[in-house]
Image (tube, rainbow, N blue to C red):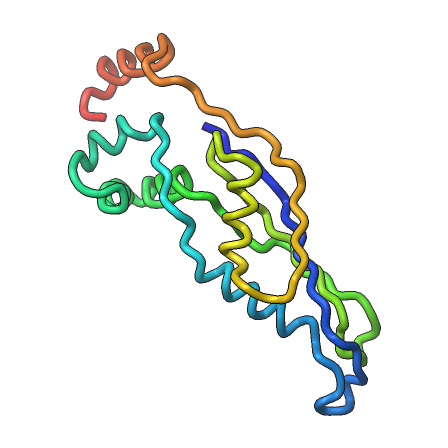
Length: 173
């Protein structure tokens, strides 16, 4: 499958002040620092798409969803990255911008997050996940309309052809 992508823009406000004067102004970067830490610490909820079930059934048939995903990830370094990405929304900071002179405590900052959601995730669910990742605080959030997001159904002729090829050329795969 292909994840949908959404850009989230987070704006925070502070109080401008002369950077040479301690205690004057309230930097918008303090709130950004809090938001970055919250996003980094956030663990998105697990979603196991039906298309991933055959892999999990093969590598980790029993247990909770979290246990099955953990065992599948542990099976190979490449699966560690892929399975995690295929079972959770990914929210990553990509751009931070602050305008104004260098000698002024910034009164505003803009943080851009790249959000990659599993196919079938609604825009409302993406917004809820981003808000959960950011946590409480004084900020404005704007999300663009999600783009993309699709899966291919299992048990297609293409899957059968791939399985036949692998059985003939790499029987242990």
